[in-house]
Image 1 (tube, rainbow, N blue to C red):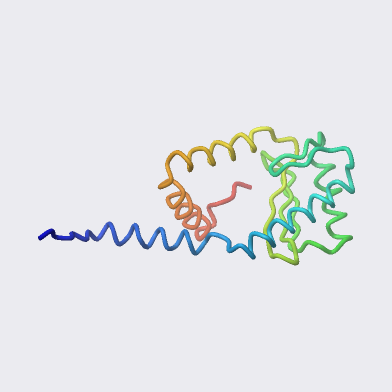
Image 2 (cartoon, one colour; image 1 turned 90 degrees about the vertical axis):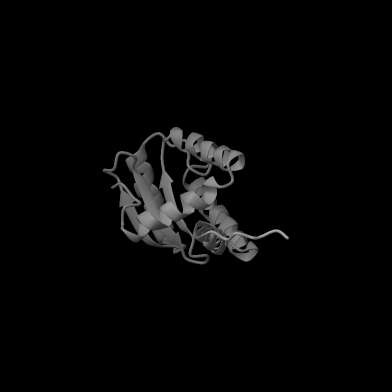
Length: 151
């Protein structure tokens, strides 16, 4: 008759996986996030109709002018709250929360390494699925200690 050995570390792994599942958006939350992204893309296209809009990249060439123009239109349309322009950072960004969904956005301008980094993470998580829980735990750990943002 075989024995089942349960190690304390295995319980910790199960808790981490459960925590990661808890952090993952429900289909409804994902739909709200997708709608928020579409709404924000519409605002950006309103200001710069010919620009190419992507998550993590907009193609706008003047970061500070772009940040403040986006700030004005987001404020005028009333679709965002907690709007913050961080123009003096090494990568200037505008941070805000979309009102309907509560989705948080960080938008940077003229940054070409953002999509590359996002693609690298996606590929790494596909290659090593155990990386996702580790990254989520680390992200929450840093956020709880206000160490998640470089300003």
